[in-house]
Amino acid sequence: MKHIAPALIVSLLMTFQAAANPNEAPEFLHLVEAKIGDDYRVVEVTVGIEDLRRDGLEATYYAEFEAALALPVALFHEVGRGQGYILVDKVLDRGETFPAHGNAVAAYQEGRWLVEVNVLDLRLPGGRPFPDFRSSGVLVLEAGTDHVARFQAGREAALADAEALRMQDLRIRDAELRLEDKLRREREVLAAQREAEAKAAQELAEIEAGRRVAEARTALIAEQEANLKASDEVIFSLLASGTEHALQFTHEGQRVQGTLRMTESGSSHASGQFSVALGNGNSYQSYLAMTAADEPGQVMATYVPIFSNWTPTNGTCMVRGSFSKQLGIVTIEADPDDRRSRGCHMDRIVIDLNGEG
Image 1 (cartoon, rainbow, N blue to C red):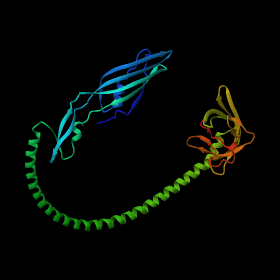
Image 2: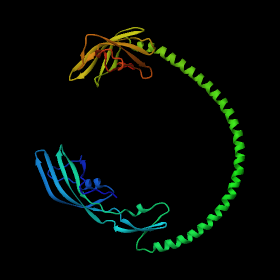
Image 3: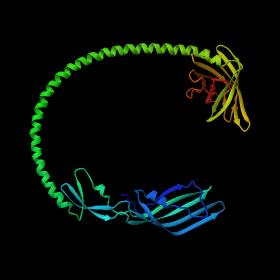
Image 4: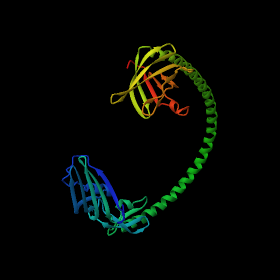
């Protein structure tokens, strides 16, 4: 059972989301139950000092209370023990009560009470529930009953029977050991034969598996190379002049949406103007040029670098971007480990090539 020293102050804060009345004291009985726990039930709460003050749309509340807590189960303590049993006596019956003292502080804000309950003085009763005394091979008996005498008499008879069974088990065990020794030797011979057969089969399986893996790897590499070689053609055909694509720009943690209007394109290059909405009627416009990179499926992007607060610079920067054929997007993102200058770093540009913006 839980024990809280009188000097220890504990608290629980609960926000009531339902509609509340600032002219009436908030309910806090269940907050006391929730804080104390262990299924203790608050039977009664007596409020002593109480102060409810209203100031316009806000209100404050303070109360000192005494709560009567009911035991969820009967409590016992050990009064003796013997071989194979523990004798316990009842301390308090289920439903008996004990006191707790504390206060409640609350504030009414924005249509709800914020309540903090502090339990300042709580002396939990001693003892434990009856099932807590149980352990393997030990019987728990309640004092004042004839269970102890009957248990001892039955135990003596059981011990005598157990000794007879033990001797019988020893004789049976001796015969079993001799048989097990014979079977063990036979199993060892059979296991050696099976191990040799399994080793040979495993070697053949490993050779076959290696062959299949090599064939699959060769086929996968060929497929990947074909997809990558075709990706450049896909990129710049989708970036055709005159098309418009949805664009997402992320800078300094701010993600904004926009469009990219292509003004020029070829088999290995494309360029255009992009515009993103910054809110409040503001926008940011710049240009973006892309050429095929030295690796298939990648592009080199040139753009105007941006300082803080969406302020463009006078220079240009070039970073690498990648194309996802499966998703149909181009992702342009500077490498954070390769920032040659502060002005040539931006977060991310994502271009959707799946359709017109």
